[in-house]
Length: 110
Image 1: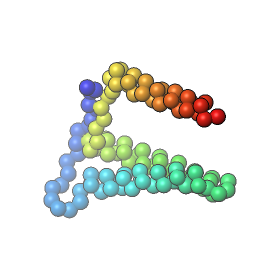
Image 2: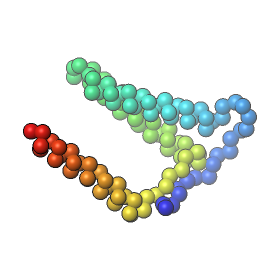
Image 3: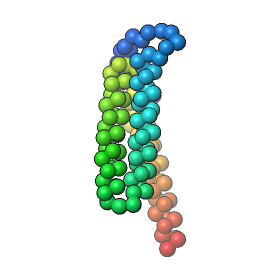
Image 4: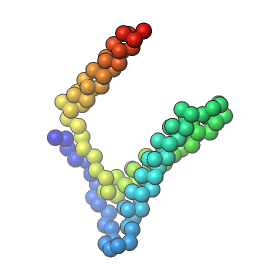
């Protein structure tokens, strides 16, 4: 198992009201959904000007989402786990196997 990477948690007030972590997590989730929606919009854009606008919105929203995650991580509200070499290699091999299967399928369908 990998090593956990985390920061000390910033204390939060207790109670029924939303605390800073709840609010930041809600905003972060909203940004994640916006990034996905803008990515879909890029695929659906009907001309270069619309594509350019959606791409700018996608880029800015994606950067903001990353900054929000970094803030939550610094506050200790998120933690990461390092992946050991074997775990990375297994994921790499699985991905390559899927690619090989797709290439083979494409060859046989032509």
